[in-house]
View (tube, rainbow, N blue to C red):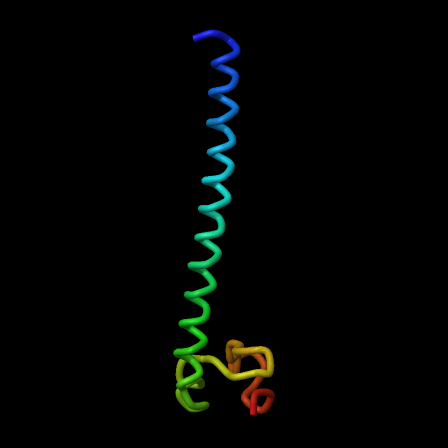
Length: 77
């Protein structure tokens, strides 16, 4: 192969690599988004007592862990 053909081939291969990397990143982000949505949907069906059993509580922004042993139960009621 000539140097020119080799350079063009490498350039095209690198461009494809960048595109495939970008597509893989997008696919991973979509997968992560759908996993978060599924988790949020499942948690939305639980009542406060069930959430407390698994160590979570509802907040205005979503859910957070209960740390009753660290700060005392009065803080979380």
